[in-house]
Length: 325
Image 1 (cartoon, rainbow, N blue to C red):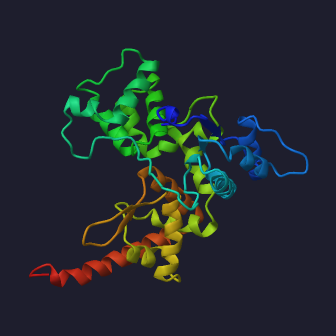
Image 2 (image 1 turned 90 degrees about the vertical axis):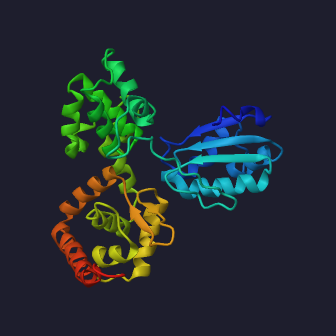
Image 3 (image 1 turned 120 degrees about the vertical axis):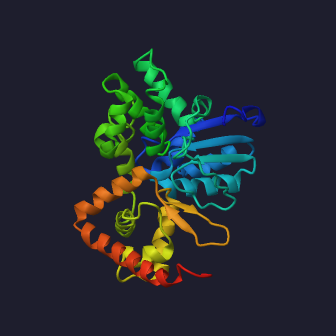
């Protein structure tokens, strides 16, 4: 995107990767260093940066902001307030909540829907399938989608939710396993999907490390709710989450924590026109949260609340199954 809009910004497009930066106080310095702006005596770096950018017409790309959200938000607010010609594109697991921010959700790669007829041309059009084949051929040049492998590759991409890293790590296993063998091991995906690029950050080398990174940045009450919501295989409503996820919290307390999980891209919202809003999580996230739930010792109690809720729902619905309602 930055490359495509390069001609629209006379003072350039500048890319800042914050992945390896751990000190929030160095965000402004990191940006300034990239732009060739030096510190001035007895002056804060952010003040100097804003002065130098005041007359510029440029795009600043901040990548991987999620672990420095507050610092990035503070910097962006200062910069766009002082420099009307500066635009900022921030890539982050959650928004910066700065005035004027427009949020664009980056979806997973497209993958074959469940139960679809696997027409070869339609399958080739799926982004996740194309990525799988591309990465597999780097290791096994003769790899191709044949009648004996098409179904397995489609299911692998579907069960991995089209997550690019997960698809790449699965494709890397074709050197040692057939696609059918990879598919059969997806229930243990966090042990199967390892061995990413040695030059990548640690959290990008395995699927487990990637999900762990997001989980570790949650507050304790958010971690607990995410764990308990993992008992819902096909999604849930706010009412069912309130009954199943916590014995003591009311609906609005659950809504507040659930909102944070949505904002941090761990839960997705599905609005049904004229109906009740439903929430879901990617299967990979759900499996991770379920493992944490079992480790916490709360798995059985949570599943019992889940069972009790849906038994009650079924008993309430039963008299109305025959008739107008």
